[in-house]
Length: 359
Image 1 (cartoon, rainbow, N blue to C red):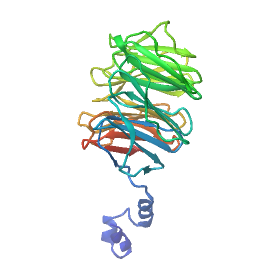
Image 2 (image 1 turned 90 degrees about the horizontal axis):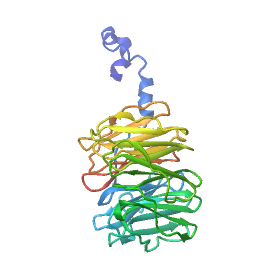
Image 3 (image 1 turned 135 degrees about the vertical axis):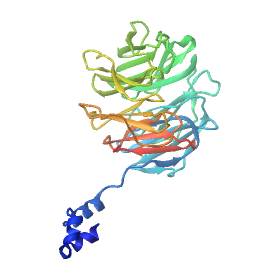
Image 4 (image 1 turned 60 degrees about the vertical axis):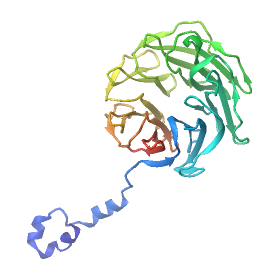
């Protein structure tokens, strides 16, 4: 097309055929300057279930997976460069029998938790810049399966788990000392989800025996007593909850029709449940980025591709496929100093794949 345009002054016929190409160099330069289109990246490994992702610094991303031999596998990225290699993982001592939960209490710190080898207690690993990964230790407890954690303040780790009788239990690390396990009452049939939006503030959400969403909040250390607030909702899967700012919460669920719904706490009250449409085959995953102004949602589609929906602070973009072929729900995580979102997922080859915005 550009060659025809260069001889347009010699032929009236060609001018009529290609009238828009007389200034051919401008679009050519624009095309050369255009950034490559995003694509899925192969990160290796062979593992079960969903990856767990955490960051302890603006450009740092740590990914953990449960290997097919129940080993704990770990890799870390910095501005798109991965260690111990693009497709390699390091092994952390120990074996696990559940998905992993990772939390950072501050710069150069990671806490890792999972169900231990006897299927009845919580195991804990830690890392900081001065020490290698420890060998892992049992935190005991009447734990059946689902473990969640958050950091409720500086150098504080709050661990929640579903235990005997489907009760919700809590244990806290405050500096170097662990509390005992405390029964917070309530009945959960899924993984508790804990979020902290400020110092000493913990909001805990569970899926009750009647399939409704229940909530409790504490200013301080979680303790038994008090009222579990029924937020309705009826999710199919575990709950997804994020905080966009101080005293702001978003709950995302997949209902029985596979449609994705959300409910928001605006600092004063719970807004009504709102349908976000779409048809998901997995629990939704959500990440907050862009200074708290953006939320990216991701779900597994009906054909095992990945669908995303972005919130820009005012409205949702609508669902669209970014391709891929995955076996479980994708995981979204804020990356690149919180200016972008990256999706991690287990592909049909059993390996880890990633896709970074724009979507």
